[in-house]
Length: 78
Image 1 (cartoon, one colour):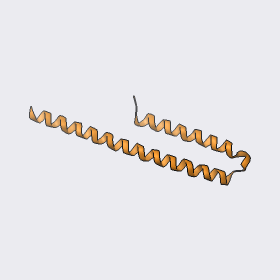
Image 2 (cartoon, one colour; image 1 turned 180 degrees about the vertical axis):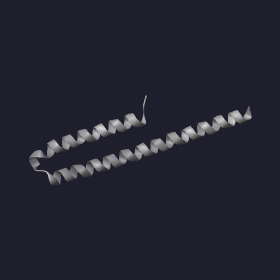
Image 3 (cartoon, one colour; image 1 turned 90 degrees about the vertical axis):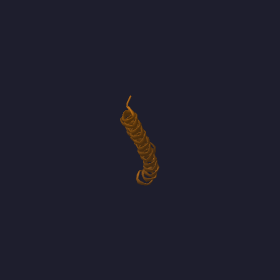
Image 4 (cartoon, rainbow, N blue to C red; image 1 turned 180 degrees about the horizontal axis):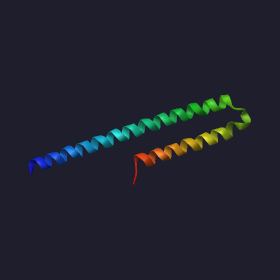
């Protein structure tokens, strides 16, 4: 009886630790994605003609948003 309670506590602790690790990884991915997004916005401004900068930034923003949604669905399935 006591061993079962200990095993349940161990499993609960492992599950909580795994959730914390996954949350930290998702947070780091989110920070990296934001950093990449702002650096790429700057690069688009430098690389493209001013007439096309807004278009390229909008396309890139849509791609980043899609990747973010995919990551959320991957890490937080229902």
